[in-house]
Length: 333
Image (cartoon, rainbow, N blue to C red; front, side, top):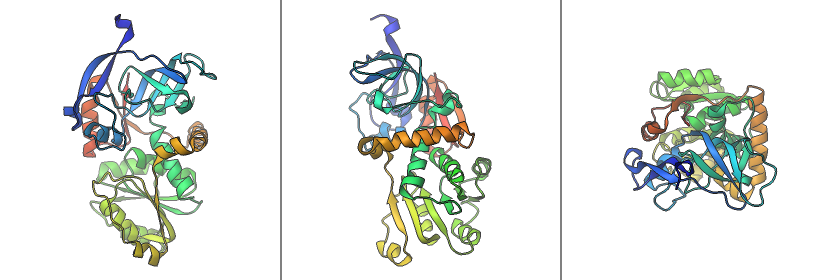
């Protein structure tokens, strides 16, 4: 096959840590099937689930070998049968179709899963808008029904989804308490707009939340960490507060005492954003419209802290797995 019909891609050839699992490959460029778009990838944001995909620990387990990369910003190159409403060259964001993920020069997307990239954002920021900001939006608005003036406690607040939650919470009129690990991350959370920043290595976030709220506690907790973050949150959640369980990046899945939720009158809310794509895609489209409007107003601006070349992907995912990053690392092609 001619070189023009081949592409560079990273492939997981054996399950494990990113450095061991990923191998560079030259693959045939995919062809769009019915209802699909062929997209030339401009940028792809790295996500913690990409690390889990490499290890075979994510809820989706593509057959080996596969290309990870769960979100992208790119330009439409070609259409499959039955696709309408799009033109070649349009810039889109969204999720590629596994097993052909976004850590490649080209990827396929279902036309229904593609959204126009906000004109106010460049490729790198647009690539980082989708999963993290959709997760923050659905968690805070759909699940927790956050209200202006409420106090929002965000864990891992300098990370990808945490940084999104700060900005989405601020846009909703909440007072944001951000919990981070280390002074560098504290500085990032402050710049993102958190009203109070807690370095968990130096302070007890439970005491800080109680002091900040006059003893009332946090109305909404956004927790992508689990473990001690969750346990502490139950000690400083307000009457009729809501704890949104987003993930377990800390490595420990809590086993909550439901009697405690009963006695203190708070809610524990699960958030699996991917289910909205399956069960209620109209909500994903509505959230994208809201997020685009916020981006156009400058209220939401994804923090791209690192730009990676193709060869840097395994190292970037390793840093993400170790918790050594702030904001988003983005592969730029």
